[in-house]
Structure formats: C-alpha cells, structure tokens
Image 1 (spheres, helix red, strand yellow):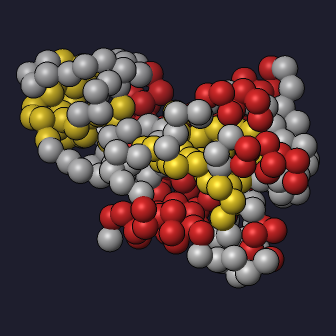
Image 2 (image 1 turned 135 degrees about the vertical axis):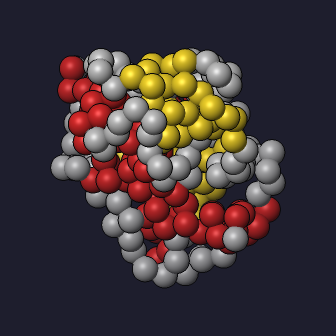
Length: 248
C-alpha cells in the first residue's frame, strides 16, 4: 500500500489533500481510483489509513479512516554528517541511509572534498536531497522524513551538534592502526535516550587537522573494521551495525 506524508495534523474522519506531486504519483503512476486505500503520515509522525474520495483534481482528496499504531523508527536519535562526494554518491547515501533509519543528515564542506557547492547550486542540492529522503521514507514505510540540513562548514556543524551525546568519526587512520574495538564499545553503550552522530569524509577522507578539531570538542575516532570502505559505503555500514545492535 502506498504511503504519503502531509504537513498538517490529522484526525479520524477528517478530509485531507495531497500535494500536486503526490496526487500525480497516486493517480497517474499508481493509477488509483476512488476507494483506493493508502497510508498517510501527518505532521506529528502519526500513521493513518485513508481512502481516496476524489480522483478528478490535481490535488487529490482523501478521507482519514483510522489511526494505526506502528513502531518502525530507531531509538535513539541518529544523524550522519558526510563530506561532499562527487556525482550522485551523496544522493545514494541519503536514499540508503533513510532506508536504514537515519533521522538527520548534515552535508559537510571539508578540505579534501572534490565537489564544491556554491550559490544557487547549494540550495538546489539540498532541495534534491530532501526530495530523495521523502521518497525513500515513503518506500521504506517510515513515519519520519529525515531532516536535510544546508551545507555547513566544520565550525557551524560543531555549533549545531554540540548537544549530541554520542559523537563519532569514521577515520581510516584508526583502521590502519588496527584499533577496531572502539566502534563496538560505543555502540554497546548507547542508550535509548542518547543522540548519536557520526562524521564521514568524502572520497579524499578527513584531513588530520579536521579530525583534531572534532576530537577537541568530544568526537571519538572509530574504525569501521579492517577494510577501507568507499565514501558511499561507510555510512551504510555504520547504520547497519547500529541497527543490528539496537533493533535485532
């Protein structure tokens, strides 16, 4: 059954309209008709069953039938921060990370990034990533769309994430030294009330001085195992390990 997100708070027996884009998907792509049931997630991350009552307009109208209980979101709060990888790698990371349960995403402008987001390009990139996150959240039957922050330098990022309780860095130099136990120790100690963030470099990795700045404010370097992972693989590896530790 299809799932869509709406910006308002819903109640049972209330009518709700989908956006033009979601209406087009429901009517033209899925070929839904009056009487077709869908899932709707409201502004409070509550899941509802709704039925299509009008298939004649560009803004489809639904009737909310029932409120449903669901438990699909990971606790604690999970965020990742990634350098600006080239081509469509960052889009792939956002899509797969959303499927894996991430709740917050920070694009980081780092020294070794090949890509540079400037001017209008930066805003368009963030808008594109937000769209990908929404679609991935619908596909993976989540009740929360990850927040996609605007591009940030390291100083702004540190200010914005100062209240996270578990702050980690995926650092390949730690792996080269054979220190593979830190990540396991950190994951084992995580509590449901924690907030967790991990930083990943782009293809060029993190510069040593960036790692020094982060560790100075409480971030902990971790290895992701004995093998060196690609920039787009590392975040998914981490989220998978986190899910295994907390959910399985």
